[in-house]
Image 1 (cartoon, helix red, strand yellow):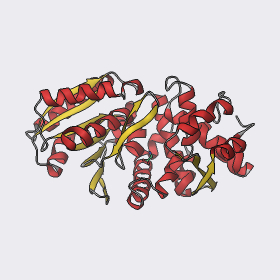
Image 2 (image 1 turned 120 degrees about the vertical axis):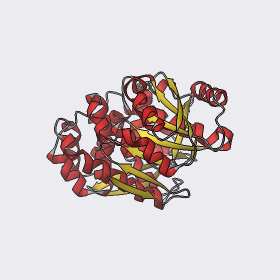
Image 3 (image 1 turned 90 degrees about the vertical axis):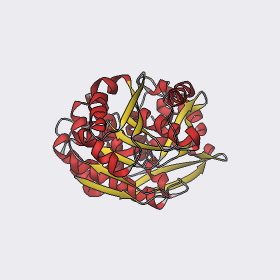
Image 4 (image 1 turned 45 degrees about the horizontal axis):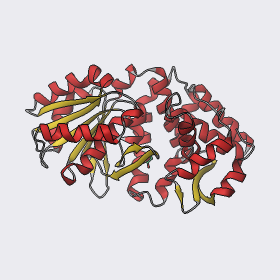
Length: 349
Ligand code: GLY
């Protein structure tokens, strides 16, 4: 078992251990006193893992009800959130009880936001079941729901009380889900860790499970370090958005349906690198993402992506913050006006 301590305004531990889902009762009772919880999950994860979690909690006298909603980004909205609040009231959840997010990024984001706001804040535990959620969204306390105007536009910073990562769970992930998480893993290599990137270059989507424990640990530790330096996303944390300015725009152009977040990030990283960095680096990155079955670009015309970029949270007072990696393992934050960004990206697909 590996434990990473995160020293944020509200400190917590991240446990990384194969088989830890079935030890959740023991791990949670060491971190929290309450014996009453609600597990929030989606229909797919509910069928796969909720019973095992409820059993493990019951072994430690923690009583947990389950609230499951239809899977997918389209559920991450104010209607689902309202249904969650009603369920918590119905089950008489008080400030001393807690929520458990069992699922991927959508479940983690909406559960975290419910925990940040219900009764002005209650504890929550993250049990991420996708690679993307393990290495990124479950760590660092960003919680949100989507509204008509865009993705993640209503949210709060709320650190979890505990994160439990069971990499055995990743073995049952659909191939496209695994690829989606690998886009964020490649991002960590590009922004911070040359050794990680070189490890990724030695593998591909079919062989990467062999190195998964090391990969998950390394990525979470990079995220810990970045979040500890800039918990509230005012500066350095923006480097985690490498590939995301264009990535979110590509997802938006596809109506957040047939194009996953990881595919958007992958295409976004390649597009910005092609435009602003050396041909050698660009080829290296493209080769790496292609070996994880991820795209290097998009059919969406840049002119149609730019309106999405200017609505992005990374856009402030008519300026866009975007990230480039001039070399593997090193990230820089650049700030330009929306019109300069447009000029920079024009002619690029
Ligand atoms: N996913 C980017 C961040 O947590 O800042």
